[in-house]
Length: 175
Length: 455
Image (cartoon, rainbow over all chains, first blue to last red):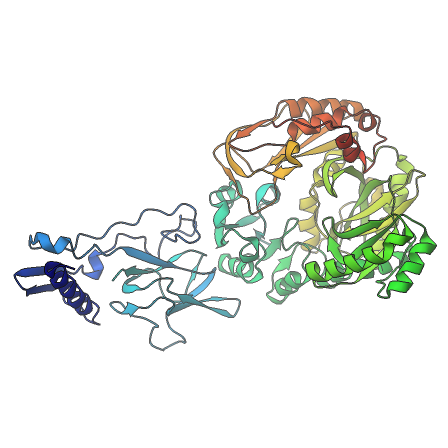
């Protein structure tokens, strides 16, 4: 690894760690050995043009590349590089969006029980396999688990509402 | 009853929806991701995606179907055929949820679904059985002794079997012990129930079935006999009513017997009593199907009775609106099943994308189908594409009409083959034309290497 690559890798790692913080900064600017990394983080509200929880029941699934034959395209997030520092683009790839969908038809809940804190809140980092919600079907509590990791940027379905199989529930931004 | 959830897919879901609509009932379609945008989903008042392609997570998944009923306010579920239609647990859950299951009571389904208890119930009701054990027979020596007494060939059948699986024909005493052991082991593995029974096997027999309809007040009628002898590995391809080669008096006598038998176990709704008829005209009980049958349209064509409408009325608790004497049987109806199967490759299923679909029409032709050009035939489900049904005042006219209708049928798509041309070959068989065919017809055709060509 060249010295430049080592510096870039270190800067990227540091920036990623900062971005993964519970309250990520809107902008990161790091410099070392004459190299500057500038990174504008995408605010959660602007990140998505994904369907909302109000989407019609029979509407095509938003995104579930595991089970849905014709997934609609996910809108790419704005390029996270700003400030005209071309070197940064080579390091920070654009975070992709991923939608977590309902594992069955039923009633969607964000929290383990009424009144409890939700499994996960906007801005929090979700690990692959982590439970993020429940869909109740005939008194069976079926966990909604993240099939990959990412930061929760939007809740796409209202708590305690009926959902179809494959209904979009959460939008995650890749880390 | 105001809203009916149709717990099925394909042509039968659309067929049930049509009657619901004619009766002013609201409809809910459920669908898997493999059936997005299907005809029944487009036509239904509401639709719910209940799971992914595999049926065990969608059409066979009881919690998903019940949730869909709950979220749409459906107060009745019509199960169609296959999937959950003969599942007593599902019928029980419906009852517990306050949803009307369109079918017989769960305990009746349970009793008739087990072949051993069904045989015991039907023999008690006076239906003739082929010589054999009336119950499961668990001792190999006793089974062998019974087979020797019946005389060979015999058939060993799994109590829990069905759809042509879990059975073995034994042609000589020396082969019995091995076949008995293998059938038991196979049944235990396939159905979780290794019990088997033994009965005489008929090499040359006709498959004749009686359509019955019973209300919840102890009344029942039969709607005639269908012949379903054109079978490939116990899968029906051509069905007709009335049954050729059986006098109308005989068909009515067997029908009356079947009605008495099912009423004796508290049957409600539409059902089918399957029989084998030997060349001498003797008839023997096989099984009861506690649901609407794929081939029910031929019965509708000659009686003018909408079986789905009658199922729904019975489920609403209404008494039958006709007695046996009110039912008129008019002419002959024939059904051919157009399947996405390749007759040249031993009827291997051919799922794929449909490019062109031209279906027959014209006088006295009914086509029950869900397909259209641009639709995909998913590999997850059965291969039935369309049922072509024709009516004629007599059998010869009906068969000519069917041949004409099949000739009008053009279904094309990449890698897709159909049984349409093959079925024209069946219609042209002298034995079939003469109405003296039996369940061995297709095997004899194959032995003579008379194959079909892909449509």
